[in-house]
Length: 352
Image 1 (tube, rainbow, N blue to C red):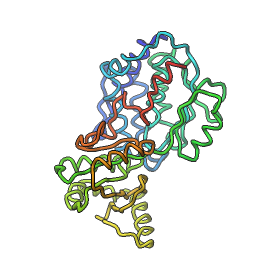
Image 2 (cartoon, one colour):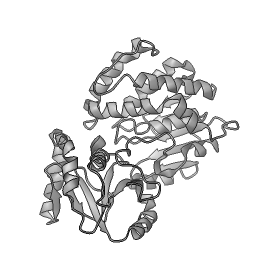
Image 3 (cartoon, rainbow, N blue to C red):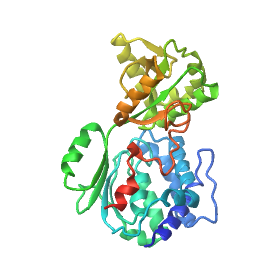
Image 4 (cartoon, rainbow, N blue to C red):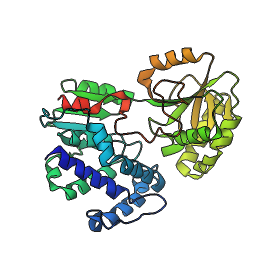
């Protein structure tokens, strides 16, 4: 199966996904296999919350639209143009996927197939339906994919390399278990935002998107703010008021009540707007419904700190005051070439 044929299939998948936005589902009669898959995908979106309570239709549709925007001919060509696939010998690559946000493992799935390998997928129990549906759609578009895609519920066996995503604890197990195989092992990471006090209201509203999208469950969600001494949080709280309805979602509300109570019982000082707490803390990983913050005196010192802690950080958000930082509101809209942990997945795969 040639790469050009695979690209055409993923472009068609992007066209299929483009029909499903949270505002409405608009059927495009020119999309392949809509008669079989359109209504079934509508049902799956609506049922996803019963499979995983965090996967609301709005959050699933946001992920779906993100992939629809990514899977275009232009994006795929730009992404793949710098790699040499000529000498790639097909191997079987095992994937152990996370399940914290919808379709979080799809980039690895796409990368393995587009680079010419076969994929052996072990899904997370928290996200096992969406990616299987997309795989079935690809196989309907081109039945040759059946030779390249396998899912397993048991342990991975008969594979040549592995890409595994988990916590810091599971990573130690992965590193031991897969020590004799080429591997990419991903651990816990968090994202941070660096503020100066000169941000516009629009910047801070967009920062709210980085905080609240997927209820803060993703490694690309901002969980920590760095702010200058004497920073006034009033503008921040006024801007993120747009996201106040998050508290009406029961699972988020329960986390807010619980984590706030834990903080207060420990006599921690909190800033609170009744749907998000801010706590001064040097850690990067804050619990759901809370964001940590830390003051800085010197931006150059902060840059050094972020560089030293790079292995704990997925994204840095700022108004371009930190090198290679991401603009406000863009953390959950990565390009195909924005690799998790800054590890070039395609380069790893073509060298197998």
